[in-house]
Image 1 (spheres, rainbow, N blue to C red):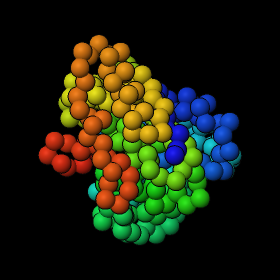
Image 2 (image 1 turned 135 degrees about the vertical axis):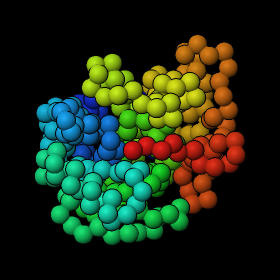
Image 3 (image 1 turned 90 degrees about the horizontal axis):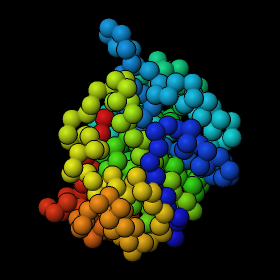
Length: 263
């Protein structure tokens, strides 16, 4: 069973410090795109910027030099046109020396039955981010994930409970400091991790989790909700179900997989 960690950070430097002592040639790092690596920037029209600036660039460079594989996985609708748009943005941020975008994208079928578009180190997978990384990780047995939306960070972590990997580090990159500094706008309630509807995800991520079984995850969820001051907690952890093709997922009361739209 894998050792799975979920934690909150505000920058990739903290993520790097957590994993830098690991055998990095066995590591695959997957980054969400919008508000994880790219922020809107300033000016008229706004010019996108690399979130974290040079500190982020140093992390990406250090991981590349150490032999870790790094990919961008976006929930953008999978299409070759959208892949090309993402590749253009990667070049504009001058990180195409880290992520290979000089290839022709192709469409592949995931185990879920949905398509992903992949080319080099860019992946468009819709909401099947964990499934996509599982499909492309090859011999990498340590999986690292970073996303600005707390639901995605928890969902990604749960997926690996029955997978043959050694370690998983799933990071919620909390965008709140950027909102408070006026660097980015406050997100809509549907995409704001601080909305009341997401407290069952936010509290465990902020408390930090380390588990290898569903039972351990459930216990830590309950403890995290108490720490948050909740007298009771939702049945979220009791809704963890094994997917028909492996992996664990959180299902809504209607039985649909619960992945909120993330940019």
